[in-house]
Image (cartoon, rainbow, N blue to C red; front, side):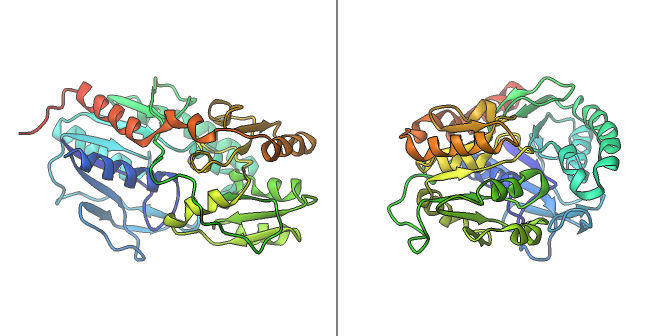
Length: 348
């Protein structure tokens, strides 16, 4: 099959969408399919084979990301299916391309974008924008042949459950450890440092933790979080992807307080490396984090956080086995089934 991924987020930015696209592309190509990614151009990233950049400008509301500019796509190859990964300009370009060429469309819901408004425009305006945005996205989604999501989404369309996939061959326990110079036990977080991730709550709740808290990542909240840091808090920039299994294997618990995820891939990556996860008892962690791979605490409840953290550190769990259902291989096989269900035939 000839597959077109249209995404409003891509390298050099590091997030779950970016790595999902990369992983899906590689796995689909192993199976003999052609995948082209259309994405916002960034002067800090050189396009690779089958990557098509779209003119873009810096996003003044969310540092590091780009706003694609509408344009006519004259040099795209022929696709058998368009798969959109965002509701903004590039996603709409994909939808228009599919309609013009009368080919099937798939949409994957990665991000509850309305959860990001508050950090950009304030709580009062965010509430107003949320009331406008969700109906607008519902209208955008209703014309896709299939909508997929890793977990339940609150949208006006029926979504096919399709976890984005965890590369359990890459993410596995390692013998090499980081942080041997830090005070044990070492716990940590890795990801975007943005408002909806609530990393400030992690720092606040661990101020008396007798060990070390390692915060890995970058984002608009980094400077503020560094000011909040305690004597037991260590900040590090984003790690190269090849270093992540070593990071996850070197901490005794992965800690998140995020309320803005649709799956939470980093916690599952930590699980695949043998590390339990402590997460708030909110969506999607009420689906993905169970006794076998970690603990959930009442969001905002410091006492419950402390108790569940202690359980994560004290109890043995087979966290890797607990997340086998999220394997990348299974996700891509299911994705191919979805494409086939739309009448797409294998090219000879």
